[in-house]
Amino acid sequence: MSSQKYSEPVSSLLTITDRPSSTENWLDYKSLGLSVEHMDELIRMLTDDELHLAPSDSAEVWAPVHAWRALGQMRAVDAVMPLIAQLRRIDEEWDDAVGEEMPSVFAMLGAPAVKPLGNYLRSHSNGIFARVCAAHSLGKIGSEHGELRDECVLLLTRQLAEHDLNHPVLNGFLVYYLLSLRAVEAIDHIREAYAHERVDLHITGDVENVEMELGFRKERSTPEPQLEWEEERMRGNPLHPETLEKGKIGRNDPCPCESGKKYKFCCNP
Image 1 (cartoon, rainbow, N blue to C red):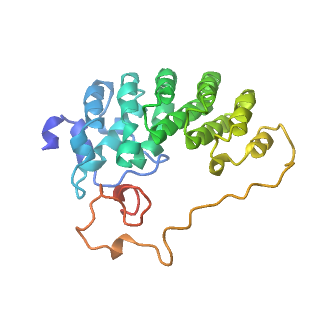
Image 2 (cartoon, rainbow, N blue to C red):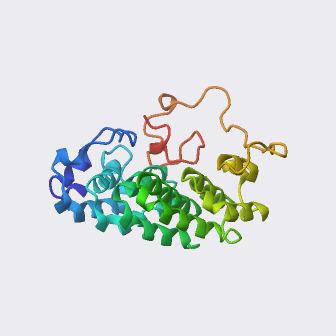
Image 3 (cartoon, one colour):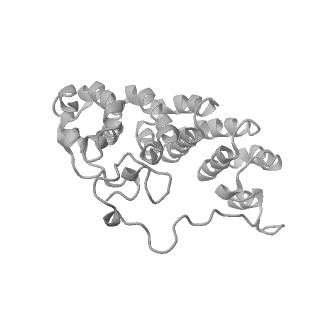
């Protein structure tokens, strides 16, 4: 039993039956008695594959989410590398919760996370969307910690300079997060990536869109590009959880709405 691996109050995270709320409404984990003295156990919970693959009808499957939130709230610097190691789950397991929440956790940790995230972003052996999450995290850190903004811009720009080696989707998100930081100093690298047709236009539009966003031009000189979008996967009434047979779909199974997400992070109530 997973509960036997953890002592109180860490083990209490295994029994929270409510689905974790949005990033704006996290629990106050200190109120559960958690503190830095529990950091090692929380890191072990965060990385526990048994919990990530726990039965779909258990509360335990949510324990890693509570663990990384608690580590963020307590500014657990020693958790930076174990947290970064979880980014692989975005590409390997379609774990969108990692991609959606880790930037907020890293923003809580601030400066100690910047260089490790930059190193992770730089490695082409990591998954595309794991690297996008690292870029997102740097963008969020730079936005919330003004003193770190320049360093985060430098790391994002440095990666965009390797546009020929990056996937166009990654380049598109690098531009997006540079825009979020109002990184006018990166414009030459941004223009170069667009000139080599290495930026996915679905993310930030074309170079003229970017130039207008950063104040380098007031209006377009060419027509807006017409992009082809994937047709909606679902037609008519959406597939609601109540239409599904009980017990047929686990929370770790692909969602039947074909979103590409796990059921627990999509249509699961």
